[in-house]
Length: 136
Ligand SMILES: [Zn+2]
Image (cartoon, rainbow, N blue to C red; front, side, top):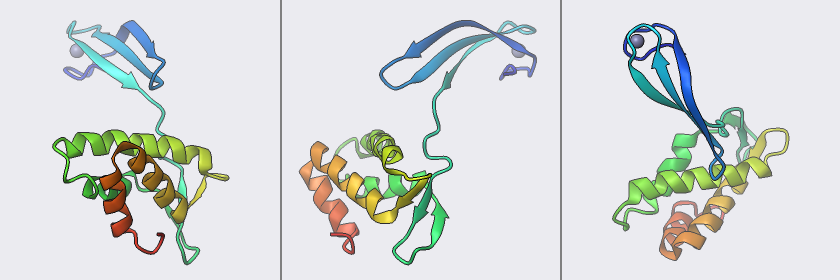
């Protein structure tokens, strides 16, 4: 990775694995300007997943679309956006286990989201179900 300040090569001066979320944190130092910055490496679970909708059409998984549907369901909460971000991560982690050859059924996404939201806040799950009436 090159320096974010000047574009010169950098070296890793410190690195730590976070077991909880499987992230790797790295401290980098620029070899030219000596500036220091941090990078985080994490698995991009949503890339490469494909969704099959009710008509059997395939489209690539869209993390933002899932986030929006989760966010719509937690507007009654004070820190809705932050919670929606965290909950979207949890749902994606769960979905990766459901995918067969990288393909997810649209109903699997809604069901996993509903189950996880219900665990967190029953009102959210109710709102979510209201936005996805075909499935429930
Ligand atoms: Zn630099």
